[in-house]
Image: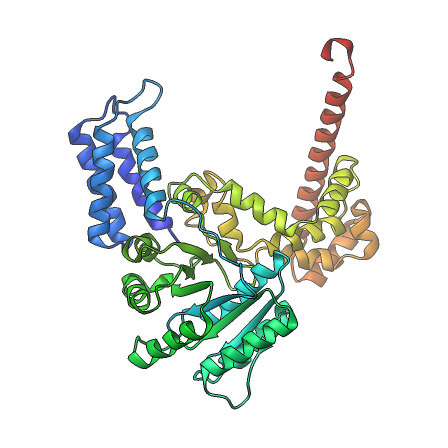
Length: 442
């Protein structure tokens, strides 16, 4: 999402590259480029100016150490200020209550219903039982949509057939949640195509009736500054506790994310990064700032991997790799785990230096389809013992997978190279362990 902003900030920092010291002239030129980059990213002009004024003041007030270049110092200052602009620190969700009630608010089309389910799946992973309440009685497909999503994530959905009173439905859902022992109740409310008095009165009544622990405003990042204006209107009525920013994986300038916290003084708590139910991340201001500045986000990448990969399975695969017993069955299993981690390009963007390299490359989530088709076209024996795959077998596999022999050969070659590399690493680790047993290494 922030690819354009990242590249423009990088261009701004180049102004100071090679400079021996910070001066008012070179800082002013760099700051001007930073302000332009923020405004181009759809950040409110006043916020952009305030941001760059602070950066300039701090840059001119610091001496550059001999080990740090002016460019590096300015990157550090901008990173710190971006973190503050995003809210300073990660904001936890309040799940205390009997049950904890989360009221979802936002305009129609913002992804409110979908993100109610995503949030339910997120909370369920934490070991808490969840129930959802379908209180959008205006959009014909909303109740059915929530039911379908509830079935996908195995979370019950409370509905009242024929009842058009959202407050009564919510009160019934609260009673049902308590009877079922649910620890969290997520209430999906009606959205409108635009802010109107009836909508605000209705959601205000829901707030009074439920007294929720959390009111989360769901907003589409692709709506730009309109997102900020809508957030302000909702906050004036609801005094919501946090924001869920959706479609952060989209082709958008992202200024809304940079502006919301500053305008309504409410934290962004979650971001939606894709269509899958798992594509909801806790918002970390420091990690987002690092990604914008091209530093990657290894912590989030590791956290996603830990959520998806089973520890016992990972250890089993590692042992097979080191013993040169890794098969195509194991490889296929690993591909399925990686796919669960989310958007492939988004994952690559979390690796320092890689995001910039792939920003102009179209990387589809279907990237593994060809590999999967080839593996699925192998017999069980071929998957377990790739060495038996001769010329005739390669021809059959290519025909069955809809690929050509060159693609099959390439996959087999890469697979064999990976096995050899892991075998070498295994020997080096074994040698290292043996070395520690020598008297002078103890």
